Image (cartoon, rainbow, N blue to C red; front, side):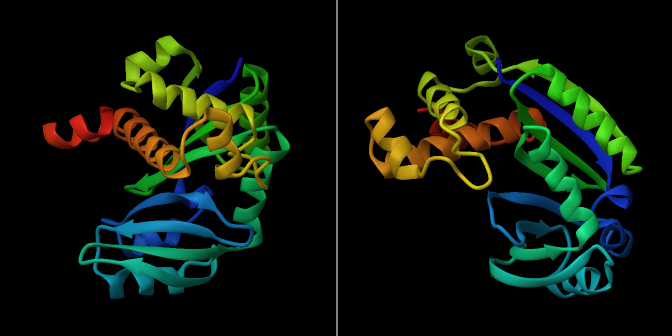
Length: 221
């Protein structure tokens, strides 16, 4: 059965360590779609000039470009150096799929889906080999009981498990959004909204982020 592992690791051992030193209030959240050569990262907690100066001076960053943004957060495509890229490659090599990654106060929290619990143990050992200290925060099997506990609706759980089973989260993907929507017999738009709501529920629950009542209602309808 699919297993979800949650790890915490230092930015100094992985990515953006220097950026967090230069901008301690910086927060980072990985965009759900992972590109082949760079990663989409939502950055906030500092003004844009401070963020870009921190990226410029960070040795783990080879390049970046702004995609979009507003008054308090910005989406950047960040091209990381080989050492960071190798860490992401480890996840794939051990049969894992990176579900979420966020960072604050110089620490990354990542959630990875594995086919079984042994794969989670392997990735922990591989990280140690690369001098990356990782704390395993949580390890659990993905089940309907787990979905109920964290607030996923049956439809959201169905969409997530179908996405996992059909390789939607793999890099590269084994199934497109359109193919997954056909499998579930719903529209592309309905599936996209269902997955976004499920992602938000997972992030707000597992990272203990509060949302107001109206927003939570909309996420669960």
